Image: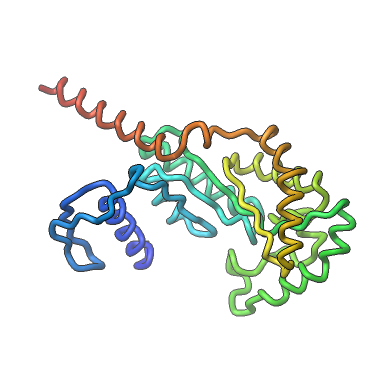
Length: 253
């Protein structure tokens, strides 16, 4: 593990303790010791749920799995297989850490939303904006490094193979369900300001997504996320582990 990931893990684990404990004493590698620290105000509804973000590295999925937290993959630049790898690692490590696999909630990004009446019309309307943004964001010194330069250079390639949601409402639904088959994700974010759309255009895109796409996706790819929040799941897992430990100690006695 590189220094920055060690730094991240230590900082996050300290934050978890400060949310959950009072009178915290702690010594770490990257900050001065804490002596009897209680943060205020205390979390009103208990410790907040933290969704860990992951784009290329296995370190964030590992940290999320360690603590039974949900994971959100970027799904913005790379092919599906790259993000599926992160999620497979997360789920494997989540279960190995003793958490209930049913509570390994996952979110995914979209790389941008551009809806039109037909996929052909979407390609014609948005080709210049999409391909110009690809050219503008290209970083020659990072060529070949995952997560920086998209391999989907044309809008046709993005529609067919990329994470971007571009096309008719039917094509956008199809793309989301293709992603769901690979990721089994519970939460989806959509980005409407990725390609220089004006505010009115962004609102129109969101409205069309809400009216024409979201209802079908909710029906075809249901989730337990809203029925059982990650916070509730984590608390239940923690209580179960404590109960098992107490039972084990009684048996030993």
